[in-house]
Structures are given as C-alpha cells and as structure tokens.
Length: 143
View (cartoon, rainbow, N blue to C red):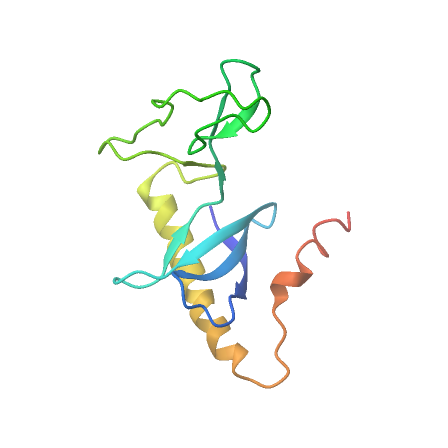
C-alpha cells in the first residue's frame, strides 16, 4: 500500500486539540476523507474518520445520541446502560468509519500525514497560499 496523495486543511487559530483535517489517496485509486490531525503531548496524531454511535428508543425506535436522557422523537426516558464500553471500560461514543487493520498500515498513514501536515504549515506561511484540500474531488471524478 502506498499513500499517493495527502491534502491538509489547517484549522486557523487552532486553540483546541484539533489541528487540521486531511484526506489521503491510497495507491492513486481510493480516497479516505475527514481524517483529523489532533495535537497531543507526543506530537500530532492522526484520528480516523468516525461517526457518533446511536441507540434506538425502546418506545418508538427513533435513533438517539448515546448521551441523550430522553428520546428526541417521543420524549420517552431512555435506558441508562446504553453506552458500549471499550476494553478499558471507557464509554465508546464514536465508531471509526475507516481504519487500518494493523500497526504497519497505521504507521504508513501516520508518517505520510504528519510529514504533509508539517509541510503544509510551512507552505501556509507564504502569502497567497491556498490549501489543496478544497480542490479534493477535481481529479477523482474526471474519469
């Protein structure tokens, strides 16, 4: 597997941990969008695209956020033990949409994205610089 393109969108004035969004192209054939670059004490970390988990209301089957206390559709009180937990017992609120299946693949993605993130920071300091992230899709839909 080869990461053939990485596009970064820096978050201006990033005071929180979210530093940037990015997309990667794998082998020039497959795009994964909405990866996040998160600041950590050990340096930037790549988080995979994810979605919020939901659970269905026992009364009307409407999908609700796992943190909701009452159904957003019918108002019924929701069961308290709906939060799935990870191996350490922490509640899981999000699930990855796409993710690497092994450490080697994660390392390839992490290395490519962090390298391009650092390069984008330097490019962004040049007057008139525009992120290529906004152009995503131009090449992919030509065929």
